[in-house]
Length: 397
Image: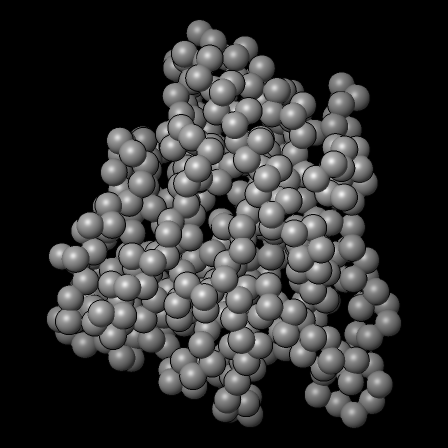
């Protein structure tokens, strides 16, 4: 059904897509890498929970039992969604906080002379925590370089970067700035060869393709439901034994085992209810249909950009090996001015480095300016793409 759904039918599922600008046309929400629109069933799930079952999940009364069942159910459904184990699903306020939480616990195992391997393609949320604990413990952080000509990581560098003192290999599943997808296999194989952990940032990938964490051999992963049609929270999925191996900071009465050991305070149950609805939506829609639709959108964008001599694309110029996330610069205009011009016409994009500091530096993008970034998901239409391309064309010097 989804494959043949019209733009208006999809908009009916996402209330935010129905809002009109001053010109009477719908806004083009093309800042999807920064947060997607929320599907209607998510809003319903959140409000239904608050109306019917709002309670502490550790009591014997009915609404508490319902809340506890909600936690159990969503952990299980999310584990299936992520390709992980329900006993390793940890809820938190956002992925950035969860990465720092895990890194803080992991730091106790680091010794002077150890090293952590990161990549130049990552969001700083998956770099800064490792830099911080390495500095604190006398360890080193090494970077897999980004090739500025191919916009892909140099996987061959892993053979010299990963050694017997490597304790963790951190990598992204796809770039939040330029859209490059990252195959997990080279990182997992390199880490396993020396007994190191793997930590994957799936935030920019989960809206577009399945995470399949354990199938790829990834030890720990994070994602952010507000990037795939859900509410604003974060989820960490880990091999259950790792949650027991490391000791997070917690209050003394909190459980000494399982995911709740890692969840500081009471979970935001209404948002977890919304997460369950988001997972159900993606599962029902199906990644094959999502990726097929997004490929067509990507082909349309890339074909249009090739006709704009004054617009430079930073990223893979082919629909393979990339998400529909595009970073561009416009000749004679700062990214901030270009983004403002598009916003005035009802097209919402971002400008800057988008926290991908190492990536922007490797591509020689000015740190203060970065690039114009626009990103699409399956609910975008051909008309959305054409409006963005026309707006960029109109910025011709």
